[in-house]
Image 1 (cartoon, rainbow, N blue to C red):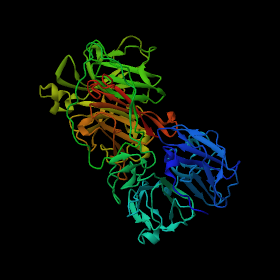
Image 2: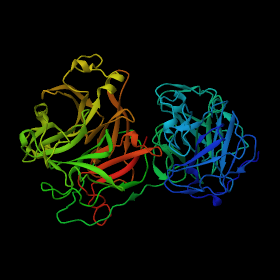
Image 3: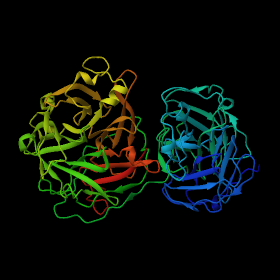
Length: 631
Protein backbone atom coordinates (compact mmCIF):
# COMPACT_ATOMS: atom_id res chain seq x y z
CA UNK A 1 0.00 0.00 0.00
CA UNK A 2 1.28 3.48 -0.83
CA UNK A 3 2.09 5.61 2.18
CA UNK A 4 -0.16 8.60 2.80
CA UNK A 5 1.58 11.84 1.93
CA UNK A 6 1.13 14.99 4.00
CA UNK A 7 -1.03 17.59 2.37
CA UNK A 8 -1.50 20.08 5.17
CA UNK A 9 -2.78 22.86 2.95
CA UNK A 10 -5.76 20.73 1.91
CA UNK A 11 -6.65 19.68 5.41
CA UNK A 12 -9.60 21.40 7.11
CA UNK A 13 -9.01 23.16 10.41
CA UNK A 14 -9.40 20.78 13.32
CA UNK A 15 -9.11 17.58 11.25
CA UNK A 16 -6.91 15.98 13.92
CA UNK A 17 -9.79 16.22 16.39
CA UNK A 18 -11.92 13.82 14.34
CA UNK A 19 -11.60 10.32 15.72
CA UNK A 20 -12.94 6.92 14.78
CA UNK A 21 -15.28 6.36 17.70
CA UNK A 22 -17.07 3.08 16.98
CA UNK A 23 -16.87 0.35 14.32
CA UNK A 24 -18.58 -2.96 13.68
CA UNK A 25 -17.54 -5.75 11.32
CA UNK A 26 -21.14 -6.93 11.17
CA UNK A 27 -24.45 -5.13 10.64
CA UNK A 28 -23.48 -3.39 7.40
CA UNK A 29 -19.90 -2.71 8.57
CA UNK A 30 -20.81 0.62 10.12
CA UNK A 31 -18.30 3.28 11.20
CA UNK A 32 -18.84 6.26 13.51
CA UNK A 33 -16.66 9.38 13.55
CA UNK A 34 -16.67 11.86 16.44
CA UNK A 35 -15.42 15.46 16.54
CA UNK A 36 -13.74 16.05 19.89
CA UNK A 37 -12.80 19.63 19.00
CA UNK A 38 -14.56 22.93 19.65
CA UNK A 39 -15.25 23.81 15.98
CA UNK A 40 -17.09 22.02 13.17
CA UNK A 41 -14.95 20.04 10.69
CA UNK A 42 -15.75 19.38 7.03
CA UNK A 43 -15.14 15.77 5.98
CA UNK A 44 -16.09 16.30 2.34
CA UNK A 45 -13.95 14.13 0.08
CA UNK A 46 -12.49 12.05 2.90
CA UNK A 47 -11.63 8.40 2.28
CA UNK A 48 -11.12 5.13 4.14
CA UNK A 49 -9.23 1.90 3.68
CA UNK A 50 -8.76 -1.43 5.45
CA UNK A 51 -5.92 -3.95 5.31
CA UNK A 52 -6.99 -5.24 1.91
CA UNK A 53 -8.17 -2.34 -0.24
CA UNK A 54 -6.79 1.09 -1.14
CA UNK A 55 -8.47 4.33 0.01
CA UNK A 56 -12.10 4.52 -1.09
CA UNK A 57 -14.69 7.29 -0.93
CA UNK A 58 -17.54 6.80 1.53
CA UNK A 59 -20.96 8.38 1.98
CA UNK A 60 -21.31 9.89 5.47
CA UNK A 61 -24.61 10.79 7.09
CA UNK A 62 -23.40 14.42 6.93
CA UNK A 63 -20.41 16.12 5.30
CA UNK A 64 -19.69 18.29 8.34
CA UNK A 65 -19.25 17.10 11.92
CA UNK A 66 -20.26 19.72 14.50
CA UNK A 67 -18.19 20.20 17.63
CA UNK A 68 -19.00 17.28 19.92
CA UNK A 69 -21.03 15.64 17.15
CA UNK A 70 -21.18 12.29 15.37
CA UNK A 71 -21.27 11.17 11.72
CA UNK A 72 -21.82 7.57 10.58
CA UNK A 73 -21.31 5.68 7.33
CA UNK A 74 -21.25 2.13 6.00
CA UNK A 75 -17.93 0.86 4.68
CA UNK A 76 -17.87 0.82 0.86
CA UNK A 77 -16.17 -2.58 1.10
CA UNK A 78 -16.56 -5.23 3.76
CA UNK A 79 -14.68 -5.18 7.07
CA UNK A 80 -13.38 -8.51 8.31
CA UNK A 81 -13.19 -10.30 11.62
CA UNK A 82 -9.52 -9.30 12.00
CA UNK A 83 -9.02 -6.05 10.15
CA UNK A 84 -8.07 -2.40 10.36
CA UNK A 85 -9.76 0.86 9.42
CA UNK A 86 -7.90 3.98 8.29
CA UNK A 87 -9.46 7.42 7.71
CA UNK A 88 -7.80 10.02 5.44
CA UNK A 89 -8.50 13.65 4.62
CA UNK A 90 -9.27 14.57 1.00
CA UNK A 91 -5.59 15.52 0.69
CA UNK A 92 -4.42 12.08 1.81
CA UNK A 93 -3.34 12.84 5.39
CA UNK A 94 -4.06 10.08 7.87
CA UNK A 95 -6.65 11.19 10.43
CA UNK A 96 -7.13 8.11 12.59
CA UNK A 97 -6.71 4.35 12.47
CA UNK A 98 -7.91 1.37 14.47
CA UNK A 99 -7.05 -2.33 14.26
CA UNK A 100 -8.77 -5.35 15.79
CA UNK A 101 -8.31 -9.10 16.18
CA UNK A 102 -10.82 -11.83 15.39
CA UNK A 103 -14.37 -10.99 16.56
CA UNK A 104 -13.19 -7.95 18.54
CA UNK A 105 -15.47 -5.70 16.47
CA UNK A 106 -18.56 -7.83 17.15
CA UNK A 107 -21.04 -6.54 18.07
CA UNK A 108 -18.80 -3.47 17.93
CA UNK A 109 -15.57 -1.86 19.11
CA UNK A 110 -16.03 1.51 20.73
CA UNK A 111 -14.05 4.10 22.62
CA UNK A 112 -15.03 3.76 26.28
CA UNK A 113 -14.28 6.25 29.01
CA UNK A 114 -15.08 9.26 26.83
CA UNK A 115 -16.12 9.69 23.22
CA UNK A 116 -13.09 10.54 21.09
CA UNK A 117 -10.68 10.18 24.03
CA UNK A 118 -11.51 6.77 25.51
CA UNK A 119 -9.65 3.58 24.81
CA UNK A 120 -10.94 0.82 22.54
CA UNK A 121 -13.10 -1.87 24.15
CA UNK A 122 -15.32 -4.55 22.62
CA UNK A 123 -18.84 -3.57 23.60
CA UNK A 124 -21.10 -5.96 25.44
CA UNK A 125 -24.43 -4.40 24.43
CA UNK A 126 -26.16 -3.08 21.35
CA UNK A 127 -24.20 -0.59 19.26
CA UNK A 128 -24.71 3.14 19.81
CA UNK A 129 -23.95 4.62 16.38
CA UNK A 130 -24.72 8.33 16.22
CA UNK A 131 -24.92 8.65 20.01
CA UNK A 132 -22.51 8.60 23.00
CA UNK A 133 -20.81 5.26 23.55
CA UNK A 134 -21.42 5.10 27.29
CA UNK A 135 -24.61 3.05 26.96
CA UNK A 136 -22.82 0.21 25.19
CA UNK A 137 -19.57 0.21 27.15
CA UNK A 138 -18.89 -2.42 29.83
CA UNK A 139 -19.14 -1.28 33.42
CA UNK A 140 -15.64 -2.56 34.22
CA UNK A 141 -13.25 -2.27 31.25
CA UNK A 142 -10.16 -4.54 31.33
CA UNK A 143 -7.06 -3.29 33.15
CA UNK A 144 -5.13 -2.86 29.88
CA UNK A 145 -7.67 -0.29 28.74
CA UNK A 146 -6.27 2.18 31.27
CA UNK A 147 -2.92 2.32 29.46
CA UNK A 148 -2.77 5.41 27.25
CA UNK A 149 -0.37 7.21 24.96
CA UNK A 150 0.41 10.16 27.21
CA UNK A 151 3.06 12.20 25.38
CA UNK A 152 4.78 12.19 21.97
CA UNK A 153 7.66 14.24 20.56
CA UNK A 154 8.59 14.60 16.89
CA UNK A 155 11.54 16.92 17.40
CA UNK A 156 14.31 14.46 16.49
CA UNK A 157 14.23 12.51 19.74
CA UNK A 158 10.89 11.00 18.62
CA UNK A 159 10.01 9.84 22.11
CA UNK A 160 6.78 8.14 23.18
CA UNK A 161 5.45 8.04 26.75
CA UNK A 162 2.81 5.60 27.96
CA UNK A 163 0.85 6.02 31.20
CA UNK A 164 -1.05 3.42 33.22
CA UNK A 165 -4.03 5.06 34.90
CA UNK A 166 -5.25 1.80 36.42
CA UNK A 167 -4.84 0.28 39.86
CA UNK A 168 -2.68 -2.69 38.81
CA UNK A 169 0.40 -3.25 36.67
CA UNK A 170 -0.16 -4.10 32.99
CA UNK A 171 2.17 -6.35 31.01
CA UNK A 172 3.11 -4.90 27.61
CA UNK A 173 5.92 -7.24 26.58
CA UNK A 174 4.13 -8.21 23.35
CA UNK A 175 2.68 -4.79 22.51
CA UNK A 176 3.61 -2.85 19.38
CA UNK A 177 3.33 0.63 17.91
CA UNK A 178 3.15 2.12 14.42
CA UNK A 179 3.17 5.63 12.98
CA UNK A 180 0.88 7.26 10.43
CA UNK A 181 2.66 5.82 7.39
CA UNK A 182 0.38 2.98 6.26
CA UNK A 183 3.34 1.38 4.52
CA UNK A 184 5.01 0.76 7.87
CA UNK A 185 4.53 -2.43 9.85
CA UNK A 186 4.04 -2.28 13.62
CA UNK A 187 7.22 -2.39 15.70
CA UNK A 188 7.60 -4.16 19.03
CA UNK A 189 7.93 -1.81 22.00
CA UNK A 190 10.45 -4.22 23.53
CA UNK A 191 12.75 -3.77 20.51
CA UNK A 192 12.85 -0.03 21.25
CA UNK A 193 12.95 -0.43 25.02
CA UNK A 194 14.20 -3.92 26.01
CA UNK A 195 13.27 -3.36 29.67
CA UNK A 196 9.67 -2.55 28.82
CA UNK A 197 7.94 -5.58 30.28
CA UNK A 198 5.16 -3.87 32.22
CA UNK A 199 3.87 -0.51 33.43
CA UNK A 200 3.12 -0.18 37.15
CA UNK A 201 -0.16 1.31 38.33
CA UNK A 202 0.07 5.09 38.04
CA UNK A 203 3.44 4.74 36.30
CA UNK A 204 5.09 5.81 33.06
CA UNK A 205 7.11 4.06 30.37
CA UNK A 206 9.05 5.83 27.62
CA UNK A 207 10.74 4.62 24.44
CA UNK A 208 12.24 6.10 21.29
CA UNK A 209 10.32 5.48 18.06
CA UNK A 210 12.30 3.39 15.57
CA UNK A 211 10.01 4.55 12.77
CA UNK A 212 10.65 8.27 13.01
CA UNK A 213 7.83 10.69 13.73
CA UNK A 214 7.15 13.72 11.55
CA UNK A 215 4.73 16.56 10.99
CA UNK A 216 1.09 15.67 10.23
CA UNK A 217 1.72 12.25 11.72
CA UNK A 218 0.07 9.74 14.02
CA UNK A 219 1.00 7.12 16.57
CA UNK A 220 -1.02 3.98 17.30
CA UNK A 221 -0.55 1.60 20.24
CA UNK A 222 -1.45 -2.06 19.67
CA UNK A 223 -1.75 -4.88 22.18
CA UNK A 224 -0.33 -8.38 21.66
CA UNK A 225 -3.37 -9.47 19.64
CA UNK A 226 -3.18 -6.51 17.29
CA UNK A 227 -6.06 -4.56 18.85
CA UNK A 228 -5.69 -0.78 18.95
CA UNK A 229 -5.33 0.42 22.53
CA UNK A 230 -4.89 4.14 21.86
CA UNK A 231 -3.95 6.63 19.13
CA UNK A 232 -3.05 10.28 18.60
CA UNK A 233 -2.76 12.46 15.48
CA UNK A 234 -1.05 15.86 15.27
CA UNK A 235 -0.60 18.68 12.76
CA UNK A 236 2.53 20.52 11.60
CA UNK A 237 4.77 21.17 14.63
CA UNK A 238 2.01 19.80 16.86
CA UNK A 239 4.41 17.42 18.64
CA UNK A 240 7.26 19.92 18.96
CA UNK A 241 8.53 19.88 21.59
CA UNK A 242 5.70 17.57 22.61
CA UNK A 243 2.04 16.68 22.24
CA UNK A 244 0.71 15.63 25.63
CA UNK A 245 -2.49 14.71 27.43
CA UNK A 246 -3.77 17.26 29.89
CA UNK A 247 -4.39 15.66 32.39
CA UNK A 248 -2.27 12.49 32.46
CA UNK A 249 -4.08 9.52 30.98
CA UNK A 250 -7.49 11.17 30.74
CA UNK A 251 -7.31 14.54 29.01
CA UNK A 252 -7.17 15.40 25.33
CA UNK A 253 -3.87 16.20 23.62
CA UNK A 254 -2.38 19.65 23.28
CA UNK A 255 1.00 21.04 22.25
CA UNK A 256 3.29 21.84 25.17
CA UNK A 257 6.33 24.10 25.37
CA UNK A 258 8.05 21.64 27.72
CA UNK A 259 8.52 17.91 27.14
CA UNK A 260 8.34 15.79 30.31
CA UNK A 261 8.91 12.12 29.29
CA UNK A 262 8.75 9.75 32.25
CA UNK A 263 6.95 12.16 34.58
CA UNK A 264 3.68 14.07 34.96
CA UNK A 265 2.84 16.27 31.98
CA UNK A 266 3.60 19.95 32.38
CA UNK A 267 0.59 21.05 30.28
CA UNK A 268 2.45 24.25 29.56
CA UNK A 269 1.40 26.17 26.48
CA UNK A 270 -1.91 24.93 25.16
CA UNK A 271 -1.36 25.25 21.41
CA UNK A 272 -3.49 23.63 18.72
CA UNK A 273 -1.03 21.15 17.25
CA UNK A 274 -2.41 17.96 18.79
CA UNK A 275 -5.91 16.59 19.09
CA UNK A 276 -8.25 19.07 20.68
CA UNK A 277 -5.60 21.52 21.82
CA UNK A 278 -7.43 24.75 21.08
CA UNK A 279 -7.10 27.69 23.40
CA UNK A 280 -10.22 28.10 25.49
CA UNK A 281 -12.56 31.07 25.28
CA UNK A 282 -14.90 32.79 27.71
CA UNK A 283 -18.35 32.83 26.12
CA UNK A 284 -21.45 34.90 26.84
CA UNK A 285 -21.77 37.53 29.49
CA UNK A 286 -22.57 41.16 28.90
CA UNK A 287 -25.03 43.41 30.63
CA UNK A 288 -24.53 46.55 32.68
CA UNK A 289 -23.88 46.89 36.37
CA UNK A 290 -26.89 48.06 38.31
CA UNK A 291 -26.81 50.51 41.16
CA UNK A 292 -25.26 48.97 44.26
CA UNK A 293 -23.98 45.87 42.44
CA UNK A 294 -20.39 46.55 43.42
CA UNK A 295 -17.71 43.96 42.57
CA UNK A 296 -15.21 42.77 45.11
CA UNK A 297 -11.58 42.14 44.17
CA UNK A 298 -10.02 38.74 44.84
CA UNK A 299 -7.94 38.35 47.99
CA UNK A 300 -5.53 35.77 49.36
CA UNK A 301 -4.07 34.46 46.11
CA UNK A 302 -1.71 31.51 46.64
CA UNK A 303 -0.07 28.61 44.81
CA UNK A 304 -1.58 25.34 43.62
CA UNK A 305 -0.45 22.12 45.34
CA UNK A 306 2.56 20.37 43.81
CA UNK A 307 1.70 17.95 41.01
CA UNK A 308 -1.52 19.72 40.04
CA UNK A 309 -2.82 18.63 36.62
CA UNK A 310 -4.55 20.70 33.95
CA UNK A 311 -8.34 20.80 33.73
CA UNK A 312 -9.41 17.54 32.02
CA UNK A 313 -12.59 18.91 30.48
CA UNK A 314 -13.38 21.44 27.76
CA UNK A 315 -11.28 24.58 27.55
CA UNK A 316 -14.22 26.90 26.80
CA UNK A 317 -16.23 28.40 29.66
CA UNK A 318 -19.63 30.12 29.47
CA UNK A 319 -20.83 32.89 31.77
CA UNK A 320 -23.95 31.31 33.18
CA UNK A 321 -26.00 33.97 34.98
CA UNK A 322 -27.53 37.36 34.36
CA UNK A 323 -25.53 40.42 35.39
CA UNK A 324 -25.95 41.31 39.09
CA UNK A 325 -28.46 38.47 39.43
CA UNK A 326 -28.13 37.84 43.17
CA UNK A 327 -29.01 41.17 44.76
CA UNK A 328 -31.03 40.82 47.96
CA UNK A 329 -32.11 42.94 50.89
CA UNK A 330 -29.18 41.68 53.00
CA UNK A 331 -26.69 41.72 50.12
CA UNK A 332 -27.59 44.38 47.55
CA UNK A 333 -24.16 44.19 45.97
CA UNK A 334 -25.22 41.01 44.14
CA UNK A 335 -22.16 38.95 45.04
CA UNK A 336 -21.22 36.35 47.65
CA UNK A 337 -22.60 33.28 45.89
CA UNK A 338 -20.65 30.51 47.54
CA UNK A 339 -21.81 26.89 47.78
CA UNK A 340 -23.23 24.96 44.80
CA UNK A 341 -24.80 21.50 44.54
CA UNK A 342 -26.69 19.69 41.80
CA UNK A 343 -29.78 17.84 42.98
CA UNK A 344 -29.04 14.14 42.28
CA UNK A 345 -32.76 13.33 42.12
CA UNK A 346 -33.45 16.21 39.71
CA UNK A 347 -30.18 16.98 37.85
CA UNK A 348 -31.77 19.94 36.07
CA UNK A 349 -31.80 21.75 39.44
CA UNK A 350 -28.76 23.52 40.87
CA UNK A 351 -28.88 24.74 44.48
CA UNK A 352 -26.85 27.80 45.47
CA UNK A 353 -26.12 29.48 48.80
CA UNK A 354 -25.46 33.19 49.20
CA UNK A 355 -23.38 34.23 52.21
CA UNK A 356 -25.92 36.77 53.39
CA UNK A 357 -28.41 34.04 54.43
CA UNK A 358 -30.14 33.21 51.13
CA UNK A 359 -30.84 29.93 49.35
CA UNK A 360 -31.57 29.64 45.61
CA UNK A 361 -33.11 26.89 43.54
CA UNK A 362 -31.73 27.45 40.03
CA UNK A 363 -32.92 26.05 36.70
CA UNK A 364 -31.65 26.54 33.15
CA UNK A 365 -33.03 29.14 30.75
CA UNK A 366 -31.00 28.50 27.62
CA UNK A 367 -27.39 28.57 28.82
CA UNK A 368 -28.20 30.71 31.87
CA UNK A 369 -28.99 29.54 35.39
CA UNK A 370 -31.92 31.51 36.83
CA UNK A 371 -33.97 31.25 40.05
CA UNK A 372 -36.82 28.78 39.62
CA UNK A 373 -39.93 31.01 39.62
CA UNK A 374 -42.09 28.13 40.86
CA UNK A 375 -39.96 27.98 44.03
CA UNK A 376 -38.92 31.62 44.40
CA UNK A 377 -37.88 34.08 41.71
CA UNK A 378 -35.80 35.99 44.28
CA UNK A 379 -34.47 33.17 46.47
CA UNK A 380 -35.54 32.35 50.01
CA UNK A 381 -34.02 33.80 53.15
CA UNK A 382 -32.79 31.27 55.71
CA UNK A 383 -32.59 31.57 59.49
CA UNK A 384 -31.06 29.66 62.36
CA UNK A 385 -33.26 27.38 64.47
CA UNK A 386 -36.13 29.28 66.01
CA UNK A 387 -36.16 31.80 63.16
CA UNK A 388 -33.31 33.93 64.50
CA UNK A 389 -30.18 35.53 63.04
CA UNK A 390 -28.61 35.75 59.59
CA UNK A 391 -26.55 32.61 58.84
CA UNK A 392 -23.36 33.34 56.92
CA UNK A 393 -24.30 30.57 54.51
CA UNK A 394 -21.24 29.18 52.72
CA UNK A 395 -21.60 25.52 51.73
CA UNK A 396 -24.52 23.30 50.88
CA UNK A 397 -25.26 19.74 49.85
CA UNK A 398 -28.27 17.55 49.14
CA UNK A 399 -28.71 14.78 51.69
CA UNK A 400 -29.94 11.27 51.13
CA UNK A 401 -33.43 12.38 52.19
CA UNK A 402 -33.57 15.12 49.55
CA UNK A 403 -33.23 17.90 52.14
CA UNK A 404 -30.74 20.77 51.70
CA UNK A 405 -27.95 20.97 54.29
CA UNK A 406 -26.29 24.37 54.62
CA UNK A 407 -23.18 25.32 56.61
CA UNK A 408 -22.69 28.66 58.32
CA UNK A 409 -19.47 30.17 59.65
CA UNK A 410 -21.06 32.87 61.80
CA UNK A 411 -24.19 34.91 62.41
CA UNK A 412 -23.93 38.04 60.29
CA UNK A 413 -25.71 40.02 63.02
CA UNK A 414 -22.56 39.38 65.14
CA UNK A 415 -19.80 38.67 62.65
CA UNK A 416 -16.91 38.67 65.12
CA UNK A 417 -18.06 35.43 66.75
CA UNK A 418 -17.89 32.03 64.99
CA UNK A 419 -21.05 29.95 64.68
CA UNK A 420 -20.04 26.81 62.79
CA UNK A 421 -23.29 24.99 62.22
CA UNK A 422 -24.99 22.64 59.79
CA UNK A 423 -28.66 23.40 59.13
CA UNK A 424 -31.16 21.03 57.49
CA UNK A 425 -33.88 22.61 55.34
CA UNK A 426 -36.87 20.99 53.70
CA UNK A 427 -37.05 22.43 50.15
CA UNK A 428 -40.77 21.62 50.00
CA UNK A 429 -41.51 24.02 52.87
CA UNK A 430 -43.67 26.97 51.87
CA UNK A 431 -43.07 30.64 52.52
CA UNK A 432 -40.31 33.10 51.65
CA UNK A 433 -38.25 32.33 54.76
CA UNK A 434 -36.93 28.91 55.74
CA UNK A 435 -36.09 27.69 59.24
CA UNK A 436 -34.13 24.48 59.89
CA UNK A 437 -35.81 21.14 60.41
CA UNK A 438 -32.75 20.35 62.52
CA UNK A 439 -29.52 22.17 63.35
CA UNK A 440 -26.15 20.96 64.63
CA UNK A 441 -23.66 23.37 66.27
CA UNK A 442 -19.95 22.42 66.18
CA UNK A 443 -18.56 25.85 67.16
CA UNK A 444 -16.88 24.61 70.36
CA UNK A 445 -14.65 22.27 68.33
CA UNK A 446 -12.79 25.22 66.79
CA UNK A 447 -11.54 27.56 69.54
CA UNK A 448 -8.89 28.92 67.16
CA UNK A 449 -11.67 30.79 65.34
CA UNK A 450 -13.04 32.48 68.47
CA UNK A 451 -10.57 35.37 68.84
CA UNK A 452 -12.94 38.31 68.60
CA UNK A 453 -11.75 38.91 65.04
CA UNK A 454 -14.30 38.86 62.24
CA UNK A 455 -11.57 37.59 59.91
CA UNK A 456 -10.90 34.51 62.06
CA UNK A 457 -14.62 33.91 62.57
CA UNK A 458 -14.93 33.91 58.77
CA UNK A 459 -12.59 30.91 58.37
CA UNK A 460 -14.93 28.16 59.53
CA UNK A 461 -17.20 25.76 57.62
CA UNK A 462 -16.86 26.92 54.03
CA UNK A 463 -18.26 23.84 52.29
CA UNK A 464 -20.03 20.56 53.00
CA UNK A 465 -20.62 17.36 51.07
CA UNK A 466 -22.96 14.45 51.77
CA UNK A 467 -21.20 11.09 51.26
CA UNK A 468 -23.39 7.96 51.05
CA UNK A 469 -22.61 5.05 53.34
CA UNK A 470 -22.44 2.78 50.29
CA UNK A 471 -19.24 4.41 49.03
CA UNK A 472 -17.60 4.25 52.45
CA UNK A 473 -18.43 0.58 53.00
CA UNK A 474 -17.73 -0.57 49.42
CA UNK A 475 -14.25 0.94 49.64
CA UNK A 476 -13.62 -0.32 53.18
CA UNK A 477 -13.21 3.02 54.92
CA UNK A 478 -11.68 2.59 58.37
CA UNK A 479 -13.84 4.11 61.10
CA UNK A 480 -11.49 6.37 63.14
CA UNK A 481 -13.58 5.75 66.24
CA UNK A 482 -13.18 1.96 66.20
CA UNK A 483 -10.13 1.30 64.02
CA UNK A 484 -12.23 -1.26 62.14
CA UNK A 485 -14.20 -1.12 58.90
CA UNK A 486 -16.97 1.46 59.07
CA UNK A 487 -20.31 -0.11 60.01
CA UNK A 488 -23.27 2.24 59.44
CA UNK A 489 -25.48 0.08 61.69
CA UNK A 490 -23.37 1.15 64.66
CA UNK A 491 -24.83 4.64 64.28
CA UNK A 492 -28.58 4.02 63.95
CA UNK A 493 -29.71 7.67 64.03
CA UNK A 494 -27.36 9.09 61.38
CA UNK A 495 -29.41 8.34 58.23
CA UNK A 496 -27.80 6.92 55.10
CA UNK A 497 -24.50 8.81 54.91
CA UNK A 498 -22.00 11.10 56.57
CA UNK A 499 -21.28 14.80 56.09
CA UNK A 500 -17.81 16.16 55.30
CA UNK A 501 -17.45 19.84 56.25
CA UNK A 502 -14.50 21.78 54.86
CA UNK A 503 -12.68 24.15 57.23
CA UNK A 504 -11.37 27.22 55.45
CA UNK A 505 -8.91 27.82 58.30
CA UNK A 506 -6.55 24.97 57.39
CA UNK A 507 -8.04 22.94 54.53
CA UNK A 508 -9.15 19.97 56.65
CA UNK A 509 -12.36 18.00 56.22
CA UNK A 510 -14.35 17.26 59.38
CA UNK A 511 -16.57 14.18 59.28
CA UNK A 512 -19.92 14.04 61.05
CA UNK A 513 -22.86 11.75 61.49
CA UNK A 514 -25.85 14.05 61.85
CA UNK A 515 -28.34 12.27 64.06
CA UNK A 516 -32.10 12.63 63.83
CA UNK A 517 -32.32 13.57 67.54
CA UNK A 518 -30.20 16.70 67.00
CA UNK A 519 -26.95 15.21 68.29
CA UNK A 520 -23.96 14.44 66.11
CA UNK A 521 -21.07 11.98 65.99
CA UNK A 522 -17.60 13.34 65.24
CA UNK A 523 -15.37 11.06 63.15
CA UNK A 524 -12.31 13.31 63.13
CA UNK A 525 -10.46 15.34 60.50
CA UNK A 526 -8.96 14.48 57.10
CA UNK A 527 -6.10 16.32 55.41
CA UNK A 528 -6.71 17.44 51.83
CA UNK A 529 -3.16 18.55 51.02
CA UNK A 530 -4.43 22.14 50.71
CA UNK A 531 -4.11 25.18 52.93
CA UNK A 532 -7.82 25.92 52.57
CA UNK A 533 -11.12 24.45 51.37
CA UNK A 534 -13.99 26.48 49.91
CA UNK A 535 -16.39 23.76 48.73
CA UNK A 536 -16.90 20.00 49.15
CA UNK A 537 -18.88 17.49 47.09
CA UNK A 538 -19.13 13.77 46.48
CA UNK A 539 -19.06 12.88 42.77
CA UNK A 540 -20.70 9.55 42.00
CA UNK A 541 -19.32 9.66 38.45
CA UNK A 542 -15.66 9.49 39.47
CA UNK A 543 -16.44 7.84 42.84
CA UNK A 544 -14.41 10.55 44.52
CA UNK A 545 -14.84 13.10 47.28
CA UNK A 546 -13.89 16.52 45.87
CA UNK A 547 -12.36 19.31 47.96
CA UNK A 548 -12.20 22.61 46.07
CA UNK A 549 -10.27 25.78 46.81
CA UNK A 550 -10.38 29.23 45.24
CA UNK A 551 -7.39 31.43 44.32
CA UNK A 552 -5.98 30.76 47.81
CA UNK A 553 -4.85 27.37 46.41
CA UNK A 554 -4.49 28.29 42.74
CA UNK A 555 -8.13 27.54 41.80
CA UNK A 556 -7.89 23.76 42.27
CA UNK A 557 -10.04 20.71 42.91
CA UNK A 558 -8.62 17.69 44.76
CA UNK A 559 -10.34 14.36 44.05
CA UNK A 560 -9.96 12.09 47.08
CA UNK A 561 -10.19 8.31 47.23
CA UNK A 562 -10.15 5.58 49.87
CA UNK A 563 -6.80 3.82 49.70
CA UNK A 564 -5.91 0.20 50.42
CA UNK A 565 -5.41 1.05 54.10
CA UNK A 566 -8.95 2.38 54.39
CA UNK A 567 -7.94 6.04 54.63
CA UNK A 568 -9.35 8.91 52.58
CA UNK A 569 -6.42 10.52 50.75
CA UNK A 570 -5.83 12.88 47.79
CA UNK A 571 -5.84 11.10 44.42
CA UNK A 572 -5.50 13.83 41.76
CA UNK A 573 -5.77 17.63 41.78
CA UNK A 574 -6.96 19.66 38.77
CA UNK A 575 -6.78 23.36 38.03
CA UNK A 576 -9.64 25.32 36.51
CA UNK A 577 -9.75 25.91 32.73
CA UNK A 578 -7.13 28.49 31.80
CA UNK A 579 -9.71 31.10 30.74
CA UNK A 580 -11.22 31.25 34.24
CA UNK A 581 -10.37 34.27 36.42
CA UNK A 582 -8.04 33.87 39.38
CA UNK A 583 -10.74 34.99 41.75
CA UNK A 584 -12.62 33.97 44.89
CA UNK A 585 -14.38 31.14 43.03
CA UNK A 586 -15.76 29.48 46.15
CA UNK A 587 -18.42 27.13 44.76
CA UNK A 588 -17.95 24.11 42.50
CA UNK A 589 -20.39 21.42 41.35
CA UNK A 590 -20.34 18.61 38.80
CA UNK A 591 -23.59 17.49 37.21
CA UNK A 592 -24.57 13.82 37.68
CA UNK A 593 -23.47 11.42 34.93
CA UNK A 594 -27.12 10.93 33.99
CA UNK A 595 -26.81 14.28 32.20
CA UNK A 596 -23.84 13.18 30.06
CA UNK A 597 -23.89 14.15 26.39
CA UNK A 598 -21.07 13.61 23.91
CA UNK A 599 -18.84 12.32 26.68
CA UNK A 600 -19.15 15.40 28.89
CA UNK A 601 -21.27 16.83 31.69
CA UNK A 602 -21.58 20.29 33.12
CA UNK A 603 -19.26 21.83 35.71
CA UNK A 604 -20.36 25.05 37.43
CA UNK A 605 -18.34 27.54 39.47
CA UNK A 606 -19.58 30.41 41.65
CA UNK A 607 -17.70 33.68 42.07
CA UNK A 608 -17.95 35.08 45.58
CA UNK A 609 -17.05 38.59 44.45
CA UNK A 610 -18.48 38.90 40.88
CA UNK A 611 -15.16 40.51 40.04
CA UNK A 612 -14.68 38.67 36.74
CA UNK A 613 -11.94 40.22 34.64
CA UNK A 614 -12.15 43.79 35.82
CA UNK A 615 -13.85 46.98 34.64
CA UNK A 616 -14.90 46.95 31.00
CA UNK A 617 -14.86 43.15 30.70
CA UNK A 618 -17.99 41.39 29.46
CA UNK A 619 -17.84 39.11 32.50
CA UNK A 620 -17.97 41.97 35.00
CA UNK A 621 -20.87 41.57 37.43
CA UNK A 622 -21.40 37.82 36.97
CA UNK A 623 -21.26 35.12 39.63
CA UNK A 624 -21.71 31.79 37.76
CA UNK A 625 -19.52 30.09 35.15
CA UNK A 626 -20.25 26.87 33.26
CA UNK A 627 -17.85 24.42 31.61
CA UNK A 628 -17.58 20.70 30.87
CA UNK A 629 -16.03 17.72 32.67
CA UNK A 630 -15.49 14.22 31.23
CA UNK A 631 -18.12 11.62 31.98
